[in-house]
Length: 346
Image (cartoon, rainbow, N blue to C red; front, side, top):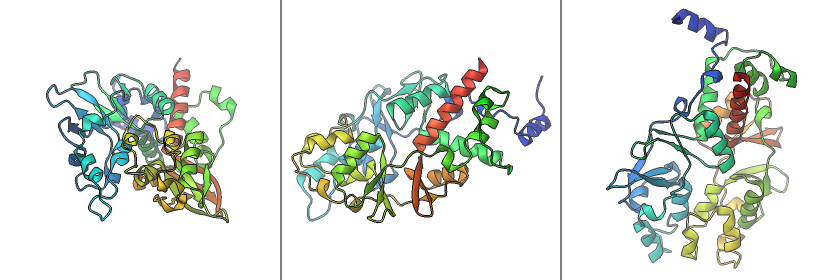
């Protein structure tokens, strides 16, 4: 029986549409606008006059065969940028790195899924491999799309904007998971505020050196740190991208190898040849601090993340650091929802 438009809108009005239950495959959330480049171009062709922070990861396509070679990751682009180009400190390496062919920098084992893959499959990959994107295709000649942590954040925000009725805050109980509650209702009860989804903060003192920041990122498996002064006041956020930019170009060209993870650089740079490593972390922290209260609706935190394209929103109460909300937290919550959906469907 075909559902009428009126019945559909009545379902929406009562929040009985089953938003999360209807999310089946990755095609529901993926973006079909995948930026691609030819295997013939150089890093200089990619960067051009663009602001590197505006560049996303790029799919590299074989210019002769037309099939996918791999991904030129955003982090790789940042790692290879010539730091002193067109300055008094410019060196031969600053110019030569721009002539590097993208095929020498591409990651050839990037995660991919079929268009028929479930969202839970994508979420498990994003969490376990800590990756920033998954390409969607069956045939490497025909890339269908790409899914990222931001895809899930935008889906959550869309849900909030459609079902924006003001309801009193409730708290989910374990017994509710075994009830007949819909996944939408479970989500509304269990993930309403920033406090509900935030992670424990990882903070670093502003006077600590950059090398310590890299070690802390490695040990805590995070991409950013909250920077605090001697009075425990938040003075900034330092991200992995900030460090990648600050370290370029390194003294040793071998450190440009994209296969070398950022945290491992601490061991490689132990000789102390990189002066940047001893600088205070506050000197390279470029990310603007965005804060929300713990009682702020999750929709506000999501809006701030998406609109500002920042790594993290800091949760604080009267200047006291309580936690952080990042796209990784959104992915974690969404994975829980999809796992619950699988259980309820069986």
